Image 1: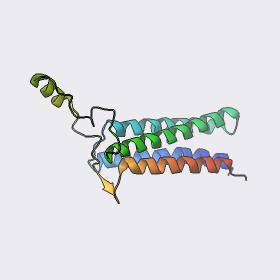
Image 2: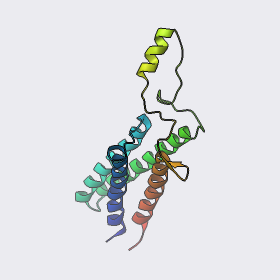
Image 3: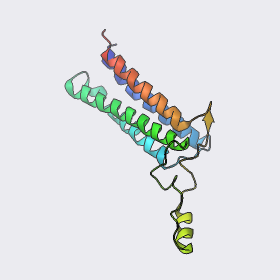
Image 4: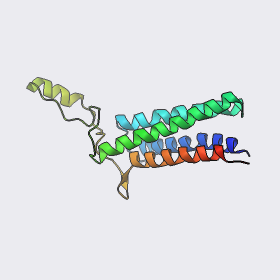
Length: 157
């Protein structure tokens, strides 16, 4: 199997495994995703579709472009994971309402804002292992996996 074929397979398996883990933690583990968790899933979904599309295209120019886009999508999910983990560790503030405090205003506005606030907070990890949240693990696996896929692709037979 060529390095390109291995990279293409890895670009399909890595985001598929991460999505299965995310969905398993949601539907089996009872951990519901916040808004930023969903942001991390979208590039993985795109990467899966792109990797699948790369298989029939083969090692031609179009197949290489589609595989490169899948790798970029995996790395984008990792970058979003870094941002989300930073929000959870309170290194910086999130840009969504699920991590920002209410802006205030009149009592009626405040109540409406509280009622409209999602129940799952982006700045509070629901689960950690060794101090690393799911967003942190997504960042680690996506970035290292994306770099490993690039290394596979560049590997000489």
